[in-house]
Length: 611
Figure 1 (spheres, rainbow, N blue to C red):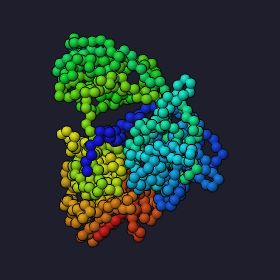
Figure 2: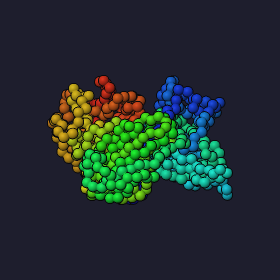
Figure 3: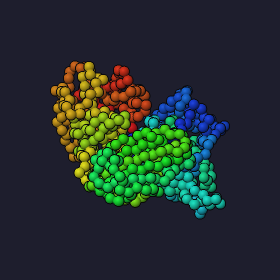
Figure 4: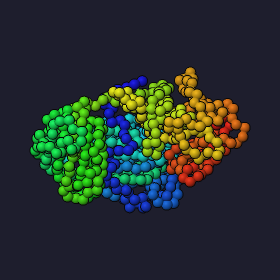
């Protein structure tokens, strides 16, 4: 099913340019508990590492060392943890790990809770599930819960895995008399790369706050009176600082068809003057123009400044005499970003923009983000109104769904290739995957919503689509390999894989595919199915396996593969689990910085991927 919805713009968050974690990052030391208020309770401690049992409720263990904050409550010690400092407008991000069936919560200002819970496998999350904004509570005339906000989709991972949460918060506002004049807002919450909240207004504290009375600032609070939970990689960005200020803007404008800066800079401008805002309207012509803006920006403090521009055509940005964005063409809907270290004080800016295509709608926008303050727009609103945004197009999977498109593949967050023979398989259990037909490879899996298809179907399109949920990239390489090439990670981009012959796929009565290929003369069937609504099980069946031990089946590759027990393995700093049937005897080998989990190839190989 395809869905176009104008209100859904912004559902996707880029992993590569998250706009509210770009500057002024303060890493919280977890060498000790000095960031937190001292407390006599002993359930909170600093550890070197932690682990949680995948199936045993509230089972978590810690080892000695530093770098991890862990709550291990017992009957006598179940204290909440509060930060020593208080915050107003703030961005905070952290990794967290839940024990099975465990419950905790992260409170902004000690009053507004973002729920932390083992919600693995929950299909329709509520406000009490992981990432939900917990409900308010009233006791008159009887206890009632109201105004909770569930996450847009369930992006929660399995117990015992490290997860990532990013929160951007705006504190309530008060006038000089102390009267509240604006409610608090959760501007954004991103869970495991998925935007699950966007601009949620909070009319008052959620359940279990440090106080029902709201305030301009307050401490972070983490629930410690429920179950075990662990944290690491805390980053706090206090956003209460003075924003940058742009002085009067001198401009020069030319009308015409310009292809390079020398086409207009050597000529007398058609108009020039001073403006309060940056806007293309100063040119007087929406089809062909050139503009040069010059201004002095007051930088309130030293640090890393982040600049974002959006223009129709070409542009060049110089900050403090240094060119940080070179002369490059962009579509009106695209943004460019660059950062530069600046000292406090007045900083000269020069921005050259020239529109080279009369068919493109005019667009001009300019933002600056200073360390310790929110992003500020220095353009006029009218300068952005000529661009009509397209309604995003989504593909849902209310039933088993098979869809073909290109897929850009980003292992480790870096673009590797475009998978041109990709098959995307969606399920009503909200567990989906991409299969690379050129390699017989399970390239990536994700949970939540299915596909963002605007890149394929909007206007002329480019034939690609994108996953919409919490994504786990695997590998675009064959699982069936000779034992002698166990560590070979060469994959197909445009050339055929040696000794690999794809034979397509068949759909069963439930519209689930079985992929078929021939490898080294052996006929392979590849079945990938959802199990228990929580994870994927993969079964490779070989009709005529080699009678020698010359071939193996690779189950996982990574920098680190750790054995949990005889049938369960953890991959890459607790990114995901691989589970094998009882009695299977896999091997783990290492070469350089690559580890491989594998079994000898036989007529049937089965394993599960849990994340």
